Structures are given as C-alpha cells and as structure tokens.
Length: 265
Ligand code: DGL
Image (cartoon, rainbow, N blue to C red; front, side):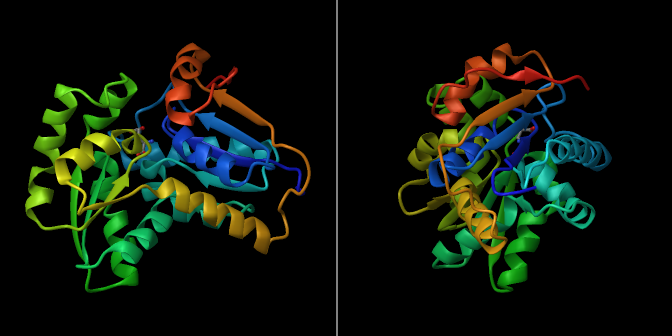
C-alpha cells in the first residue's frame, strides 16, 4: 500500500456513485476502485446477517486489490457493518453516517433533525445513535422511504408520482418542525429538488457525500497517503451484467461511466 494505491468504494449497487463523484471532485489526483454489488441490491430490505456478509465480501474484494482506504458508500452497510469492518480490516474505513450526522448538528438551529433512509438503516437506529452521541438534546425524527430507491433507479426524480410519494413519506416529518433533514441513502440526493419543493427552503437538506469526501481527504493527509502527481484513474466493478450500470451510471456520477467489469459472486 502506498500513495498511488487506490481509494476503494463500495455500495449495494449504483447509488454510491453519488459519493464517488464528490471524492473525485475534491481529490482529483486520487485513483479509485468502485464496486457495485448490483446482483444483490437492494440491501435496504435485507436482514442484518445478509448485509453483514455482503459488506465483508465487498470489502475483501477491494482490500485484495490493494486499496489504501475503504469507503462504505452504502448507508445500509454503514449502519449495520461499519464497526465490525473497522475492527477487522487493516486499512482505514470511512462510513457515510458519522459525516452526515456531524454536518446535520452543525447546521441545525432548533435541534430537530429528520432522518430518511432504507428500512434497514432506519431500523438500525444508527443515525439516531450517532446524533445523540454528540448531542443528547437533539430530537430525531426518522422515516423509512423504501419507494425512493426504485423511483430514482427508474429515472423518476421529478414527476407527479414522485411528488405524491414525497408527500406521503415526509408529511409527518414536515409537521414535526424539523429544520434539518439528513438524506440517509445513496439515492436520495437525486430527489433533492422534489424534497425541497415539499419541505420548503427553511429545512436544510444534508447530503453526506460532500462530508465523506472531506473526511477521506483528511484521513489520507493524516496517514501521509495523499497522491501528489497526475490525474486519477477510475475503475468500476459490478456483480451483475454491466450494461445497466454503465447506462444509468452517468445520472449518479455526473459523468459517463466508460466501462465496468463483472465479477462473479
Ligand atoms: N445503497 C443503499 C443505501 O444507501 C440504497 C439501495 C439499497 O437498498 O441497496 O442505503
């Protein structure tokens, strides 16, 4: 492992590209390797044991590739597996929940914070724990929004169905008087416009991707692993046929995914 080693990023599928996008934007010299477990997504509806096993398998693949740092871009994997990954892997491991929680506490004024995510993420209580660990006075209102992932995957981010779904899921959060909402799932940043339209400008939307990229930068610096020369190269691996990943990837990454290699699971 050295400065030229890549940053490894994994997600249950395609959504983690929103996190990778911010890492590439902030750290353009770094090489990255992304693994999307497209054959086994979604994770958000699966059991704790299954998400744990998948998360370990994904991490092992990236560690074998010689990554210098591992980013768990999936909120569900972070909620369930982060602590165990950290204690059993030798590379630094960064998850999405803590950076999001820290940012939310920075911006909230009334200490009423909403959290939305997959069923598994919300059920784990990981965001509530992370928020309360830093501030006992904070009030946390959480809501699972399982239909958001398939809507985004379908490319539906701004139509009448999305508006209706947002209204049903976020109606009670709006009533609770939150001034901050954590978008606790890789797919939700793509629904920002619809969520903002429903909640209004007074609620601050926290998308942890940017915070994670900053955290990656500071961990690399601390460990003297920052890559200084050249432009980074980016490779992509998936566990199912790559066609859909390549086709839909641009929506999440903001630039074209040139190709992806399929690995067998
Ligand atoms: N990547 C997942 C997350 O951030 C969303 C998709 C899934 O359920 O696998 O929680």
